[in-house]
Amino acid sequence: MKWLRNNIGLTDPERIHLVNRRTKKQNYAVSNQTPNILIDDYIKNTNEWQTAGGNAILHVNLEDTLQQLGELEINTDLQS
Image (cartoon, rainbow, N blue to C red):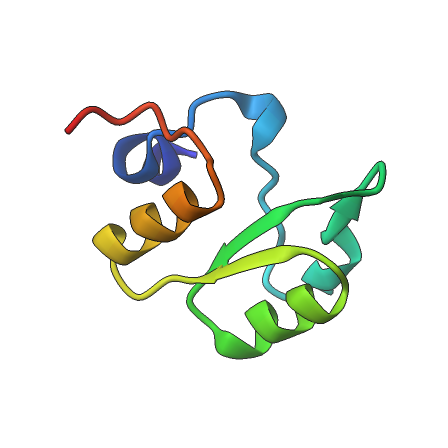
């Protein structure tokens, strides 16, 4: 949670779900018929997430991740 707050700007605990790396993350791709977003540095996880109907961002660096969040129209509460 601290990393998300410091690096992405997400602070609302209702919007953040941390998933154990052994858990099948794709099971959380959609909630109430709404696609969730996965930010992950492992392409296998992002591919499985998208196949399950969610939006996935392959994390390479902060700038790229923030750009992709912007393209999904996600407000990260970060100021330029």
